[in-house]
Length: 327
Image (tube, rainbow, N blue to C red; front, side, top):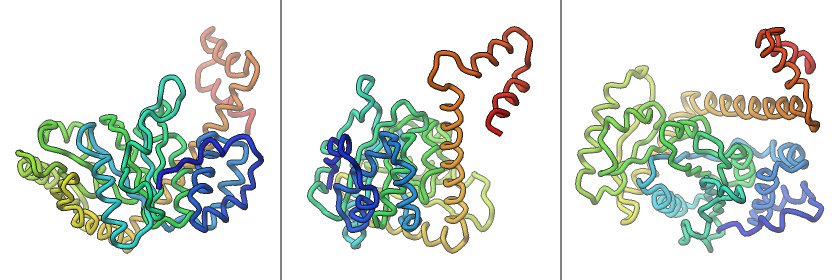
């Protein structure tokens, strides 16, 4: 189901424990309101995260990325259909470019994946990247935590296509799917985009078009030249036509296979620890930055910057002094 709860998440007093309990019970409106608190950076966010913490860490997070035009939304919809056929509850975070006026997502949920709008086992939410580089919204990790704690078996993160910066999704997902399509440029372009290092499963979409087999062969050849430890996961390259529904079950099977491999080898745990480390670091850096900028026109950082320009301090000494006020 698409989420229509955002307007009601503002204004009235919020019962965070009640929302968490309702989200755990599968109430879509409660899930949406919690994500809205995340996106709005609500003062209640600490309470929200504390309430969700005991229930997180169970969902399989799947990142879907690729250049614009490869069919990410259509592929996501097809994968959701296949996952639902196996009985899994699925949450979808579709990260869109931000509106330059409102900061909201330009592409609405209802335009996407309309086939799942009435399915209670599917939750779809568009999130604005709000100028954040890397294809993901700053609040994506916390939104993932909401869907994870709400009991979704699989959480799909579909990113905007932003070229080389889309490698960020690989640090967010348990399994990263890289989509390509015939006619979108040759294999060398794929290598330039850095995707040979980030994908766990590669999918050539629009396989009913001419050139799909060639893209698959070229990508396989390039992957074979990539140095990997002997016991590492060997990313498969699959053909799929999301529009026609062909090859989708095979992709889902590979997602499950990678998840099982990652869990059994410790790779999944290492990824999640790294993800948590990045999340903690981002929160800490943001808090420090806000403390430094303050609420007045003149801050300690301004004074230190002027001393650096005047040659009275070097940048390292200035940084030491800035950190010293918080040590």
